Amino acid sequence: MEKIDMDGVDPLRWAEVRRRADVIRKYLAVEDADEVHRKEHARLLGLSPNQFMALVRAWREHEGRAARLAGSGAKRGAPRRRTRLAVPHESKTVAAAIIDELGGSAPFVDINRRVAEKCLAQGLTPPSRSTVWNMVMSRRSTQAGPLKGVVVGTCRVRLPVQAGTVIAMPSLTLAVRSEDGAVLAASMSEPNDGWSDFLFRLVAAEEDVRIDETLSPLLPDDGHRSRSITPTAARSALSRVLGRGIERLRLVYVASKAIAPERLLTTREDRPLSPGDAHVIVADALTRHNGARQIPPPIWIDTGSQ
Image (cartoon, rainbow, N blue to C red; front, top):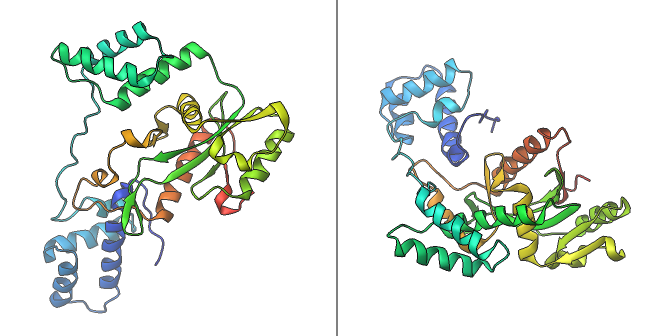
């Protein structure tokens, strides 16, 4: 299939847009198309003939730009549900006071429990665990000062991806330079020997490397310059450097706090992404993230591009 310009299209509608474009192209390939052809192709998209022809005109007039197809037609679906991202100011004030009282280094479960208890006692809706987590991470970064060196850890990307018969959020392993947030290497597949080669080069350059201990078999034995840290410590370090996400991509550092991936599909046109499309989206975000720091895109370990 000819490549489609998806610029400006919500990634969750890529599959539907491709379907619409495919039907329109097949219609345009018909010589001397008549009313029967219009009705037949409109039916494939669940549209009336007039609505279908409006799509065809938009496709022609805008030189095949997919953004003209994304929201057109009868079945636009319900508007995206408002997410509960806005936290009442009073609740955040309570959370901040508890963090001040206990200190950012206190166990997160204790902080979160106290925040919930205090909010409920005052008749307030407690902030979500993820909101309290982000506030605690912000406080810890202030207390601990800037990180140095390179941290290698794994998080998840807040995208719904079709993985066989289930929908899941894809895993993303990153090597991030702490001083400026530059992403040096990335992988969306199972860690492999390519990480060993990459880490060896980092160590040879005398970089301080800290790596999630579940990846430690890939870590060169170089003495004090590189060391393993717990998965929680690795995710915390990534969150301190990258914050809530990269460009428009939200990252999930604690899977148990994340929304179910199926709930990210909020309109009738939304579809889970293929692994290939997810890779394209993440790679583009990482390229723009690094570009803002005037450095090249990261090495993709799982593509063999060393």
